[in-house]
Image 1: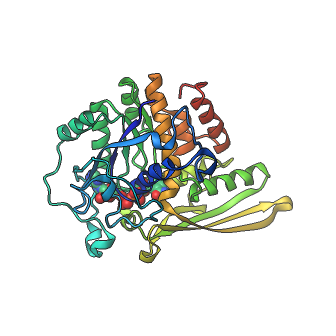
Image 2: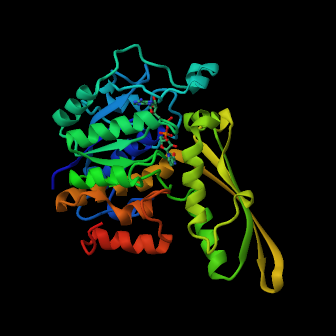
Image 3: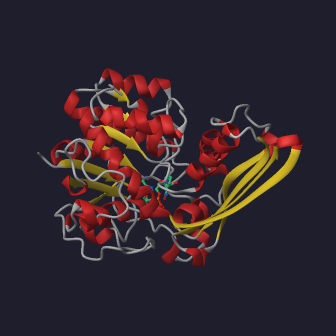
Amino acid sequence: MDSIKIAIVGVGNCASSLLQGIEYYRGKSEKDAIGLMHWDLGGYRPFDIEVTAAFDIDARKVGKDVAEAIFAPPNCTTVFCPEVPRTGVTVRMGRVLDGFPEHMLDYKEDCRFVLADEEEASREDIVRELEDSGAEMLLNYLPVGSEKAARFYAECALEAGVGFINNMPVFIASDPGWAERFKERRLPIIGDDIKSQIGATITHRVLADLFRQRGVVLERTYQLNTGGNTDFLNMLNRDRLASKRRSKTEAVQSVLKEPLDADNIHIGPSDYVCWQKDNKVCFLRMEGRIFGDVPMYLDLRLSVEDSPNSGGIVIDAIRCCRLALDRGIGGPLISPSAYFMKHPPVQFRDDDAYHMTEEFIQGLRDS
Ligand SMILES: NC(=O)c1ccc[n+]([C@@H]2O[C@H](COP(=O)([O-])OP(=O)(O)OC[C@H]3O[C@@H](n4cnc5c(N)ncnc54)[C@H](O)[C@@H]3O)[C@@H](O)[C@H]2O)c1
């Protein structure tokens, strides 16, 4: 089978983990490959994915081979595959728009974005690069709050005729207007905002569902998250956070029998702790009532490397997107979006979304 050709916008920590993972699994066999949901997904293995174009705006990444750029600062995620061979793909200057948060200027260059001194790409430049590179889909890894930039790149994907995987919380796949445009162009789209492998959202949802199934009334809950990567640094600016909070909160509210009053649910990125780097820590509390209206409390602390946690999901989202392309399916992929993303076009319980995604892979469902 041909390789799956991807383009990436935002060569940050998540892109680094994904590209390291593609190389890491190349040397493995099915029985010694740890950390995957699927070795073979519809005939595609993890290393059947190839990056053919990449865009960024950081001086330390633009102009470099993408295999080098993924290890450039401020990327700080675990290096689990140091030997990523050169790809021959140079990271191109993108279009900045609202991708560069001004408050980052107050921090050391090692911890923040540094704007490249290159002419910004026009829409025509990006579309041409996507077309010339043979990319089949564009993966969006822009910082939270990049509303204009995310829409700009989604427009480029539509114009270039490539699928779109929206890994961050600007609502595109879950926006009916955008979804319709991808459908009209018969281009698949999966989104929005990755739900990590074992992250705060999936853990919180599964526990909330467990409370519901076991007849426990959830009265109050919080989910506080800290981390020390640029994603967390970016999210110190509360004005950029609205869609992230909505995405994370709705992901939990949607599995409850009755949504909680806004005063009784608090979910969000909570602070930036520089030394944590790409380690994310989630503090989760759930307060409920069991048999006889007796109170119970659950406290959980989850500590996980943030970016590989997204890689384990995106590696499957890419292959599902390619299956849709192979089958001539366009528009939002309902089942994979519900399983892989926090804010999909339609929310389902995770067990249901899992089975629906398996059926999609087997060709038993169109989306
Ligand atoms: N587990 C996870 O890490 C996880 C889970 C869910 C969602 N996400 C989301 O995925 C996105 C990427 O996360 P990350 O940790 O890789 O972030 P990151 O900060 O490491 O990377 C963002 C990259 O985008 C680049 N960039 C900024 N503006 C740009 C523009 N206009 N054009 C091109 N490039 C631009 C930056 O230079 C940087 O390289 C974030 O929005 C994050 O919230 C991540």
